[in-house]
Image (cartoon, rainbow, N blue to C red):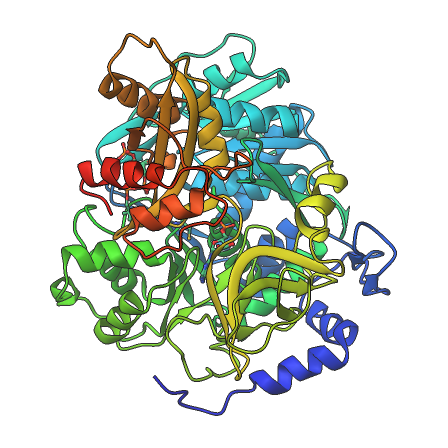
Length: 638
Ligand code: COA
Ligand code: AMP
């Protein structure tokens, strides 16, 4: 597809390159500060510098109060659409402000204030959004944990964030089952060393929960009482550099990384993207089909649309099966959505069930302007299919939890550049993206290498990891001095288009969900029958990748391999959660290794994916690869 109009992209990118501080100072004018920034960037502060070091602000004020004050009070801020429960609701900006300010007053009653951490373990319901904004209002630091994680993962996050309070609901709803959250939370609190004083529990009609007498409080009755008393909390002034939230994401071990987001940089960068990247105007409806537990949900279900005065759709359902592959088209038509943002997996799922897109019939999509995809590589096939059936631009864009918004994209608001399928297009202002070889030298156009970002990172990117500057440096800044290492491999072509081909570490992407194979290996290795193991991500037509665990059993294990394999699948589900989608454990006699004992995971992946591979020169015993191939063939893989 070609660009319909001349794009302003090159001019705007060049403006940023020539004067980054001037560019961000101008972008910062769209934010209502308490104390506007005098200094835009302090290169000497923090690990690699800090944005807007002398400014103060409140994120919730910019998301709600200012819009109500400026006449947007009656406009819908949030549309809740839940095919899994049959519920629908709409909250105007004025109603949202009421809900958020009241909940914030309740949180204050439990002593929550500036800098305190609050864990939010909630499904896709409006109260999850209220909770995030209520924390922002108080200057408290929220950490949302995705509902598909198990008790142990939640416990790890509780111990790292040390929250004063936890907000939860009695359940989440998956199409095939009700996921009771309270037993998971109780399990997590039993495992965690840190014990928060209070848990606020929202009773949903689909599940009840037993309450711990002194610790657990009834959310609804406390909010109702605060409403009756007319109690509301005001916005607390915070430094632009104060943390807004911590979002844990998979690292290379079972210990997740606590990505920190600041207030000021996040406000400025996200607001800029709404108009310039997504091409959305205040008052229009934006639909991000993700989850508030992921960065895409933080940025584009909650913060950016509200900062922009747009209306955001909160969708509690799936792309297919709730009730059919026309679910997204129904939501787009019914709520007059102008742009949809989701993961390519969602479109693979829709295409699989409805290849002719018959479910589009009868839905008026005349106001729908663009589809944005991110979270995993958008395969050209799926992308072209979406273009053909929707007849609007389909825009792949690349980002990471760490960056909080898009690194490489095609800016609809500035005017689209011609699309090259398979490339998310070009770096956004703020990002100097380069491709380096292992020695840290730039590679020629079209040559694969490590995709890196020249420091400093722009506003909205993580300033550090929660209370761990050292881990931040080691994980991101040490491999290529002067650069942020994205841990993605790819290439940049002669036109400056960036192609992202896959991770260089042991992170895999399953249905747009970022998972650590190292974390899964830790779980498998903890089984008493397992001598050694390796988990690799193997190709999956729907989810992009799926984890496959190879295990070598200890001598003398009495249970049969099938029994152990079943136990291992259950163990990963119990320890990491259903989101790990770990369904494939394979018992083998040996793992392929180099003579120095390094497991050849990349070769195992190639065998599973049916790709050609070069025999590693350092392999200890080539026959092991045949055994791996045979084990996979036995399951119809490879
Ligand atoms: N709470 C509890 N469990 C959850 C959950 C949640 N919030 N989200 C997912 N799960 C469970 C699922 O029920 C499933 O469990 P199962 O093994 O019992 O079937 C498991 O975790 C894996 O979920 P998922 O990988 O999402 O697979 P799925 O088969 O349920 O759905 C798709 C497949 C394609 C429909 C779904 O993955 C999808 O909508 N993907 C879009 C991805 C996305 O939004 N990514 C966010 C980043 S932009
Ligand atoms: P997350 O932090 O969960 O957003 O996952 C980030 C990772 O997802 C990146 O490092 C990439 O590996 C992958 N990813 C996200 N968006 C894209 C994209 N548009 N193209 C290719 N890979 C992507």
